[in-house]
Length: 462
Image 1 (tube, rainbow, N blue to C red):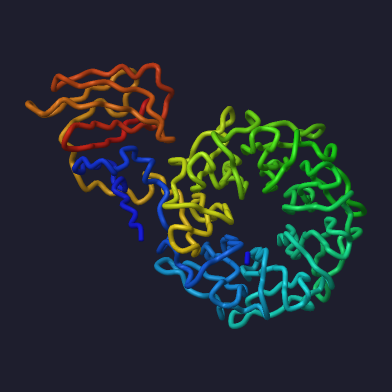
Image 2 (image 1 turned 30 degrees about the vertical axis):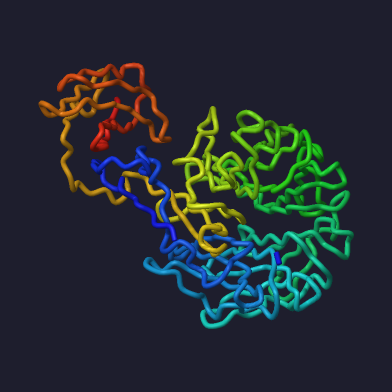
């Protein structure tokens, strides 16, 4: 079947610490932090699926629980600890491809491949006390893979999957209040499908499904239901080559985006969007520095696409990138997880818009871990005065750095919010003026490093 301690020293706007070779020096290296304890599940966790309760904004994680015969378990973060939602291992038997979603009223639902019903699809919801079936258990009547659960804008639960009875073709069903019924024809794809992903368009409320299309040489295909039939969005098999680990998301403006592992580009991640006529790449094709797996695509509240993935360039650790309108840039440091990761799930908090990722954590015995990107402006407290002064702040074209008389020579670095060095300078004199007129407006970090300390301050460039 399918103990490392984080030191988040940059939580204050000014940080000073003794220089050690294993410290990270960029403030954004510490931006990803654990939500509760790392490896919080009791046992190994597979098929981790993360979602936020829309009512109380608490994060929940569903997974297949190794400690209870791979049955389904859901946990939530109560602000201090991860606690079970109902009984752990609530499915009747092994549950694979667990997919978690919330109803508009805040009830958690989980869809999964149910070994108790010959691998058909089952869905359960938490009624406040127990996990109960939604409709009949095993309602698809036959084997199903790649189950994906989503709620329509009108509040109906839909499940998409690769349907064994229909030759592993794509199928979507919805719960009409009494029964699970087919949405269009079952097995509507041309051939077998893998990596099924479903999302709803917020404007027309239509379901879209993306998948690796084995009927088109395993290239990416997206289809939508037009209230009568399933029709192609653009042309089928639009990727240049094989597309694995497909993830579908629809922008706030209603454009479908798809990310995938792109065999035609050295198995790096590619993201494409449908412009109304064609599928076009978002930024360059093959945007990651190495191979990318198990990816999850989502939009932040401002409409920027973010991509979480297992990063082959960083020993299969977790990395998140976002598209800034021109390029794909790192969110914090690449490879920020403590160790290797799998079963990636990316969502945004409805309360503060911060990205969260859930994954199976190799460093913690393949247990579940959730991390969030904590901006340095969240929860910042002035607690310490640095030994250097920086002025003016805000600045327009120049800043002056003053250090104490007799202080050892320092290396100055200015970093942007992605942790990239945009300017470096050696400081020999106690007072040095730095020209920042060529830097774009924004917030930067000024870092001074010598043989004893590393200190950091924020500066605003107007």
